[in-house]
Length: 499
Image (tube, rainbow, N blue to C red; front, side, top):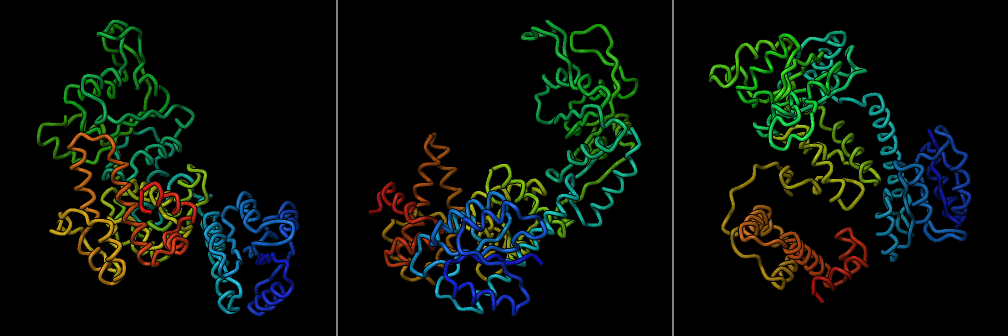
């Protein structure tokens, strides 16, 4: 195993940690200042780099917080434990904001320090396994038997140009499957063109699919190639095919039959060589019975059918998908990836995810932005997951009388915080999320254009007043409890007029 790097100018601290960790069979390497650490990092390899970094904050020749920032640039997933004096709260908050795994107050209890470092080692090893797994499966993720069936089908179709119909609920990843079918087909070097037939108005869809000639209609000032021409030699993905207008279904059937079509306003047939992959969340057999979908087109498209399972049918894939989306979200935002606790993953695994994989992906974006700490706990999950203080997942309740009542005045909220148990019970009964939604709907209906500022003002005011009430007005402790900086809470108090 790679060593634990210890950085402290105090020889006694280094000695005590080295001996304690060696007794636990954890190798160590010690440094007296950040400069030596950075020099060692510049020449470190994947094999001899640090498994965990434990650093003091105040040392001759550099700050531990500066070291944290520079280390995170090279090793964003490396757990860093910052040692600090117990009273130095600002440093602790800054350490968390800089991406520290945890902070260790001095003087520390040695067994607890060793346990903390061991947890950091486990987290580091878990991240390494996760990164390796993600590198091996960059396209699609899924260990569930239903997803393995999909992967096998993609493999069997890899040498074929046959038409494929993908069925599955909205958000289950049908376009990802279509892209995988294209990538692993003889047409991989050609274009992949996707169009959602339900998202384009009926009067524009024909032009989008088949293109138009100049002067074909008002505004058609130049000739335009449609999606069939754009996809020539490649794959055309027709998403939500069940919503295609009936008259356009006839034109589509003709293209699938002989590969010829006419642009809107055109008189010369255009030849195209396109593989069509269609997708729908609807029951096309029922649409055929209802007369809303052509039966001959259905049979033309339904040569090979792939059913994509809903996320609730592949719950074992939730952990790997969650970690993948957290990594992707952090990459897009340019921040360090959040970690998620096993307890939080358990609750996510119990959630039904009506929006499927797309909902989980959006939830991970939300968690990346909104979770104050680097470790996502069950309490950080969005309200729709339904995690309660008792550890029970409950369906959303109907708005209660308390939820529909006017919001309490700030003074009432502050007073309530002196009774933590009563306040928690009141909050649970009030169903404030639905009350917030009701307020938003009412403000939207009023035509106001400052709704974000208004509701954010209310939310932040009550949150800060509750924290100040719980800490008897101590701002630094309130900031720590909220997971924000001292300067942030001071500025918010001034901005919100809470002085």
